[in-house]
Length: 302
Figure 1 (cartoon, helix red, strand yellow):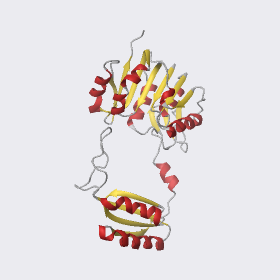
Figure 2 (spheres, rainbow, N blue to C red):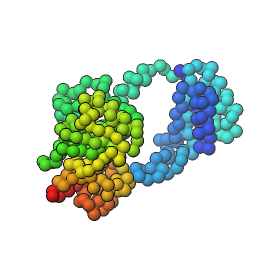
Figure 3 (cartoon, rainbow, N blue to C red):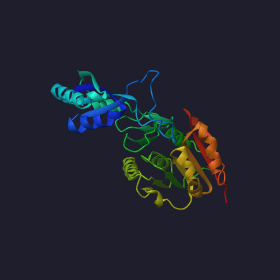
Figure 4 (tube, one colour):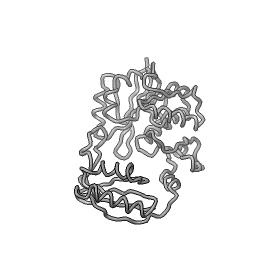
């Protein structure tokens, strides 16, 4: 394969990318900050819950892959003719060594330890010898592979939950891949409702539950309106802003004596969450991992 490397100002990046993919049949196009790793590097995404600081980089590097050198050279000529006057120019054109992209992608996802006996393991890896409980989960469209601190925090709480924290009926609100719902089922939950606003996440949860041997009668996935009644445990790994907005709803789902466990919260956001839930529950930080916190509350028994 041949890689064509271009430099372009923000004003033409989108149109140039569309031309490369749709008009010039590039196999792939990536866009990077041309000033990355310099003092001029610009953050494209803000912190969770905050707006992005800018819609794009002032200067971008575009890398397009083509099957043949002739196709790459033709693309370079067309790009210069269309966008040269707007500041786009060719930086390089060179061969790219063939790689086993599937193997390369898989190598980036290793088994994740939750506790010494509880692991999240991709399907292409053998489970560690010490693992007694294993969630088999491969990267997909929905959030949740066990690699993010917020997911690890929730799974760790499930595995080491306080005495008296029952898993009779569990709600995973914002289930994503279904990893928390599956974890709860594997750790003994009698009934798990997993809900998400994204139909793709609902289907991902169903597929992953089946792959882990969790019967549909034990784990039901659906849209948020399928959650009903009170639960002994409510899990919500989302982000701080939606968690604040959902405070009345999530608190109402916690049964007497039940627990609310939330993640997706930065350390500096903890006080805001405590205040948001104060009318219903006393939410406090229970665990920390790499700048993120897990917040929990228990409703008084009836």
